[in-house]
Image (cartoon, rainbow, N blue to C red; front, side):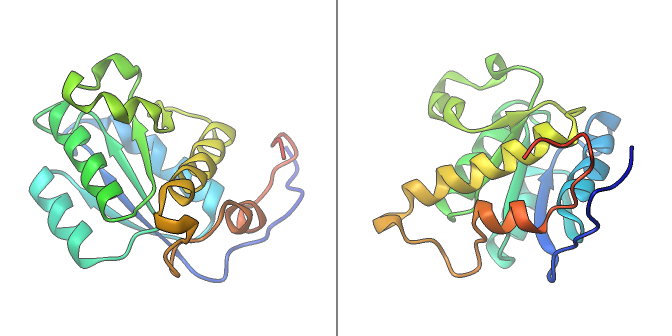
Length: 164
């Protein structure tokens, strides 16, 4: 597959990935996210406490909340809700929305991907997360540090098989 463009973003995207680090479930996802966004600063959290501490001290562009974060699936759902409360766009990482606890049913509206999602699926989910949060931010105003979907779209390396 020939690359159509090698455009890389000027800055690094700050990504919080919260998952069970003892399982290889999300390992491939890291490479896929990097192939979509180019330069990323990945913060890998393996516990809810770790993710909370990182979320409160770093301004993230996107949170990837895997529902396998121990204790699964509650910890991943709690983190997703807390990230939204911090106005951080969230993409759930799960193989099925049925894993979302009933007490977090509103999270079913968030974009989600499986851990082995393709680059096209990841790009769509990231774009939806940015758009969804922008619609819900008070007065329709985004944080200054939160890029728009158009910035994501323009910054992402595009391959011949990618859909625009």
